[in-house]
Length: 397
Image (cartoon, rainbow, N blue to C red; front, side, top):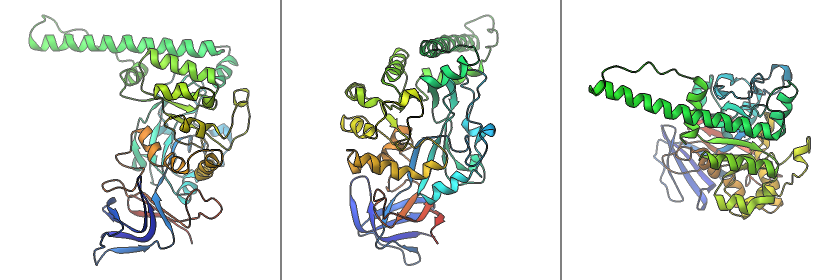
C-alpha cells in the first residue's frame, strides 16, 4: 500500500514546500511536491503544521562499540594490542540492542557511520547502518564505509604507555607511512602475480607461478591506496591536520578529515585542496591538550571558507543531540541551510551514500522525520514520527 505524508512544510535540497506531499511506495520515495495526488487507497499521515525532513545522518560516531550505559571495561571500540589493525571491522562489534539506537530514532536520526576508536594509527573499517534492525546485517547500508586512521595524542599515549612504537607524533606518521608503503608494494606484487597467472592460462608461460600469499591487513589496506575506500583521518590540532594532508597527498588517498578541531586556523588551505571535513563534537570540553584550541565557530568558519562539512557528535547517546550541535554552529556563524545539509545531504555525499539517503527525492529510501518545528529551532522542535524505509520506527505518544 502507498503512504502519503500530507500538509506539512517539506524541506528538499532546493526548496521549501508549504503544504507539501511526500508519497512513499515499497520503502522508497515515489514523489515529492505541492500538487502531488494521493491514490484513493493510500494510507495518510497528516503532517499539517509540522516540518517533514529527510532522516538525519550522523557521519562519525562510536555507537555500540562504546555502548551506552555499560562499564568502559566492556567497550569494543579499540583493539589496543597493535597500532595497525585495518582488519578490524566495526560491523563485527555492533550490538543492535545498544540503548543509543532507540535514542537516535527518537531524535530523527536514521543513518549513522560507526567507526572504531582512535587508539590505533590504523584502527579498522567503519560500517554505515540504519538505526533499526534486529541484527547488524539487517541494519547495514555499506561496510566497509571507510578506513579509520588517527594522528595526535591518542595513539602515542596508548602505545607510549606500552613502551612501543608510536610514542610520539613522529612515530604516528612514521608507522602510517611505513604501512602505506608496504601496501603499495603488496598491491604491485599482487598485480604482477595476476599477470603471470594470466600468461600461464594463455599458454604464454611454461609454468604456473607459486600461489600468492595473502596478507589480510595489506589486502584490506590495498583498497585504501587504490582509492576504492576512503580514509577517515582523526586529527584535532592544525599540525596534526597538516601531517594527515601531507601523508594523504603522498599516497594519493581519497580522504576525509575527522574532527579537524583547529581547522579554522588553516580553513583557506583545506578549502583550496577540496578536502571534506567532519568537525565535532561541538558540545565538548577541553578534556586533553590537543583540544585547547577548540571553538564552536570552527564548523562555520570552515563552511564559509568553502570547505564541504558534515557535523558529528562522536559518542553514544550524545548522537541524539545532533540537531543541537548544528544549531550551535548556526549561532556561531554558520548558514542555517548549510547546517541542516551538514546533518543530511552533505553528510550523505561525504560518505558516498547520497544515492540512497540524505534528501527527500524520488527513488531514495523513505527515511523521513516529522517535527513540530524547524529542526534547528531547538526550543520548539520535537520529533513526532520517524520512518525508515517507509516503516514507522518511532512515534511520540
